[in-house]
Length: 573
Image 1 (cartoon, rainbow, N blue to C red):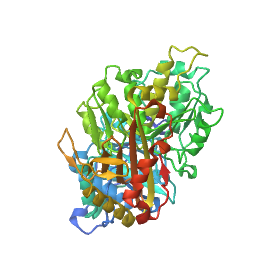
Image 2 (image 1 turned 45 degrees about the vertical axis):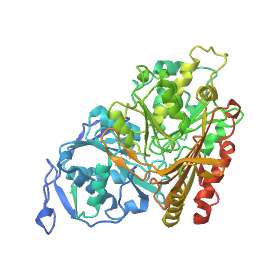
Image 3 (image 1 turned 60 degrees about the vertical axis):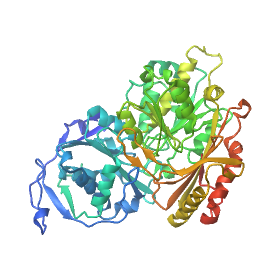
Image 4 (image 1 turned 135 degrees about the vertical axis):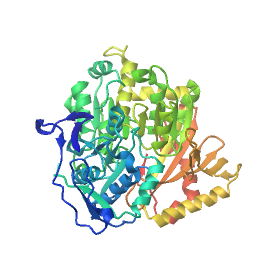
């Protein structure tokens, strides 16, 4: 078996050497049953180590996330990885696996465990990010570009890292997309019956320029009236930002913030929103703020876009990218279609209707977009949870969103001379709203609620839905429909039910409740609120002010404070 390191999807040789072939003396393991005899994988001896099932290893939409201490406990990580390989069966033997992560604490140690298990279960080669670091979108690009079997990502995304916080692992399949439920369900089944770990006895061991016009971007970045600040939040996109923004596009080093990776993200929470990226927000609302600001999360798949004293809501961001797709060379042949997750605002719907594009509303989870992309039905997609992407890969892609917005600004300003009227982020938004209207949107996150209390809230909301036929009045809003969202995949016919409790009102406003699967402790209740306006006099109104009446209705109908004791959300988007 070979282990090969990569940087941004490019192969590098450790210490100038050739890719490392590993072999060990062929000694037999001390085991009791015939089924646990050592298994030989090429020149590698495999030692079968007895284990037993560990409770709670159910894989969610974004893999398995738990406290780091739990992952470091005996056989916890190994059990899940072995269960994955058991679920994949013989089809993975002789194949190449990619491995990387967001650089969080325990990643390097975890990679050693994974490499040994991969060799022990028949993989021929593992391609590892340098220092075990690889952004989620880069992983997807690597799998697709090299036609690899799949990849393992050691990430808990935007969750905080470090010894006392979170670690996670997820598997991306051969299309670069997150593992489908057919695989994650098998993994969970295997975790409940696992008895043997197959360890090989081994010693310890680039985003493409094709999507964007780098020449135009480089010219734009050199404008005297343009400046920017990119915040990597001490996470995985720091090296990518330095290479792309500084070395390729010519931005000054001062454009970068917190671009040195830290195992615990410097004690921060690497989630690019107005709450956790507050240092960047402060910079962007200062008197001398740059023209453009952006941030990305722990594993590089989420993004936040800011202008000078201006916030672009993620729901608006994907709609504005789609509406301005001509600014991105990859899309100049036209869009195949667009898609959004159900909780995401309807701003993208209006763009699709105007441009006569196929439109899809899916459950939350990037895997649902993958099927549409593979079928050639979707070019741009997004989620309100700061995830934006295109069909160049099969993951949400933070750097893609940043470069897409820079491309829009470059395109809008290409004929504007220095000293002319610079087209700003706010100008792009106002132009968009003047054409399509504005979907005011907000999300309230109530984090680490006890599972019992969260269940009470959701059960109560279900009872309200059952008692709310069309025409029911909730405050000043009239119910058009109230249900638990269900999705039938138009490609494979699979059905995903129980995807979110929603109230849709006669004026198009919506209230949605979901339990998030991305936390590692307790439950996160997410409340989504949306209201549409085509009145230009309202477009610059703060979203919390515009949505105050419907937010009041949502909190009252859910009895959230009564059941949880929470008077305020943890995060407001």
